[in-house]
Image 1: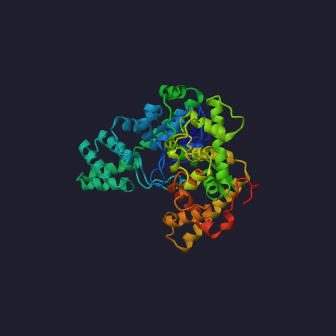
Image 2 (image 1 turned 90 degrees about the horizontal axis):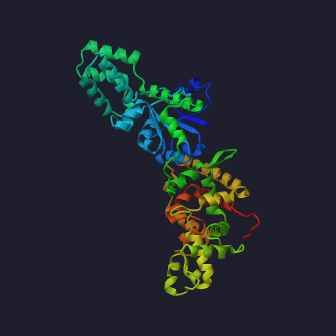
Image 3 (image 1 turned 90 degrees about the vertical axis):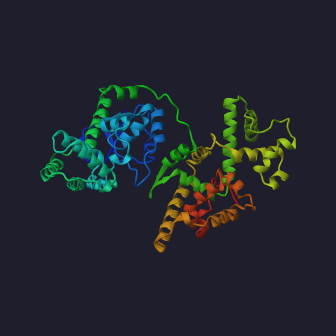
Length: 471
């Protein structure tokens, strides 16, 4: 069992507290981090802190993917408490009072747990105070007779109307004075905040650390132990979004840092002249193997015949007895007029099968393509070009500070690839499909980061998947 803890400002001294524990400490969680972590069945992941403003927050689907894979996920104090309150019915384990307050509806606003803080190098020095901590401190003040419940409620409501970055103990004292509290009560409240302020988020984070420790030595409480012992009773749907997030989490390490594998794939799809042949072979072989495995039909290595046999078994194309024009009209949507006029029927159906192929509805064969590319020399070359494109874009921003790749002309990008791929008018999308690119929108989005590099350095991007092929 490997144990991980995503933590930051809720427990800034976590490294000291856990120095003797076999728990891997990680910074506040953000979107993609759990998929990049790739924990195994039986591992435990604790979520305390997480980003949501500076970058995308950790997605529910990522947590569900871990639970589905047999990973125990605990949440407390901050982002972890929020996600646990939302996902405990799926097996995520919530720990502490903040989680319980969200679960029971006593807390509803996400920003209750948010604070402004410094960087990790400064141990996440707090610049503001989470409202959930201020609530707990005011509750203590009510119990000690410093103020009544009505006044405490008014102060909390006033702070809740302020942006989270402006919430602090000095601001609380100012509001108390403005609410007409007697000076001696204001001073007592100030002293309480200065000497005995309740840090509820820290308390809950420590509870989660305790749960991680007991899971490691077999002393876990009932909820955590039950979550660790019982498999998830749901299956995560392989949506196109999860597919993209998983691919986005994959990368290779280079001398210039980590390069996302999806960027390498896009570079090959866009610029490798022989990519259509590579992709066609990939799809046909995949379908032939699938037919042999599921339909028990072996076409003796003939990939086109095997792929078409599988397409017929799945009722994707008409059977051999059908040759009527009305049964083949769908091909007009997937082939150019020249292809319809010059290719035999088997070739036409093969082109259709390749262009329409999806692993599951809406999910392209990007993962299979990356697996097939792995180990080929083009991968290292493409990774270098991804870095070179980044440098070109950085230089463009130095010359023109407001430069943004997302403002590059869509028409120019489409015109560039029409010329590069030799696409006749109206056929560019079909050429994109030959490269596993779903649509012109996807083509433009994929090309934006590399357009300037390719336009002004055409010889650099003359790639080949198979180095033995020639123009």
